[in-house]
Length: 277
Image (cartoon, rainbow, N blue to C red; front, side, top):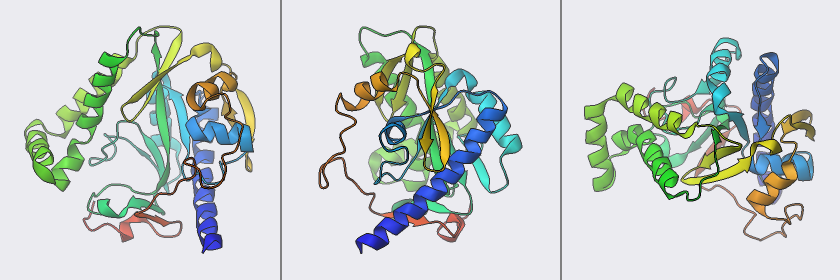
């Protein structure tokens, strides 16, 4: 069983690397900065590849360059690859974009009723120009509001519980275009000026000195060569602690799996949707 699971994970990682290769090609052609982020950065530095048990890829792109990246993705990505955000996919409910491979599947079983692109994909996290705040509470509240606004299409379909039903009514009144404008306004509000980058994952915000990032440096990542921030030691220490180069022992909390997820590297998510797009 373990070998079967490992083989499935290996196939998933191969598909993720394929999508990453397409993303990197767009960035290189148009001088768009990107950096491997979170566990993908750790994998590049510590393993020169995926963290062995990792099943996703996270990438940073400066928010100031995200519109440019989107423009060229829409023009140049091969047909099987899809730039996904709130505008290109009406029922998409996350506030950061993804690049997906349409002929594959990575979908929570419980979300098969959400008619959107569920191809295997990589997460694109924006880096916002920022100053280091004395307190982050107000920023955290805006991030939480942004995330909840993004989820309105999800609530409108699910309608599970009183909160989601109320939000579904609200979304029905506000409409998708207005919701997208509100989300864009909130995203723009995070972009200021300063010597730091702010990034967010869920409701969590972190601040990193800009000097850690540029110009970046290259690391092997399996068969690919990827870009990480030149101050990756400071970044990884900030995110994971000073012992980030120590591989956790098997069975520790750092080893995890995603249950209840449909992964299919050969069939499109369209085969699993219970509602048509």
